Amino acid sequence: MYIDSQESLPLVCVIMPAYNAGPYIAEAIASVQAQTVKDWELLVIDDGSRDDTTRIVTQLAQEDPRIRLLMNEENMGVAKTRNRGLELCRGKYVALLDSDDYWKPQLLEKMLARAEQTGADIIYCSYEIVDLAGKTLCNDFIVPPTTSFDESIVRSVITCSTVLLTGKLAAENRFPTNLYHEDIALWFQLLRDGAKAAGVTEVLAAYRQRADSRSAGKLTSARRRWTIYRKHLGMPFFRTVGVMARYGYYGLKKYKKV
Image: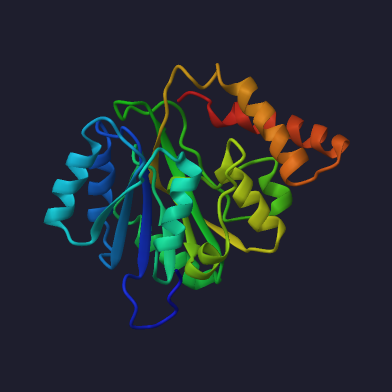
């Protein structure tokens, strides 16, 4: 639901899918509460957690009315859960934050300023990559000030926990539910169809990643990318080969250790 009205609250609706996120979700929610921009609503959508996720969020929601806990009747997966959030969110902008990531206090302030400055449909920012304990794994990922479809397919710079969308764009689009890396597939699709994207080069978020899964998952990730390029975007074979080669090069640079 998109409400285009000056009197509508909140300014930003934050969508947070959660599944067995007990160890991290309080930190993720606290990072939203610490924002210098206070005009937001947080939709936490529990996708059938079996740990203490529900208890933690329930307690936090009782203390802060801007936090809403929604429960999926059954486990739907992250794409369908995010889509449920898109259907329920309201406001001028929509932000996404995964339940194990977190924001720096000025993320919304600086991304909203960039949105107003550029008129872009999608705003993204630089981020640090940390392990389960919050320790830095590699160099910060610094994004370019703008990206396009042709640029993004060889070097992805938009990540779920660092994205701000206009309410209108969020209302009109959904994550594909038949693909892995459904978030990347959506960003590619939006940029291909003419959405304008602008970045904040300052590091404003932390992306949490398992240190032991980066190398092991590279081949699987590459296969899934191939599927997105060929089947979702309909990219010709030889162009896909060239794009995959450049994607591999940037992927190796991204995880260079400090």
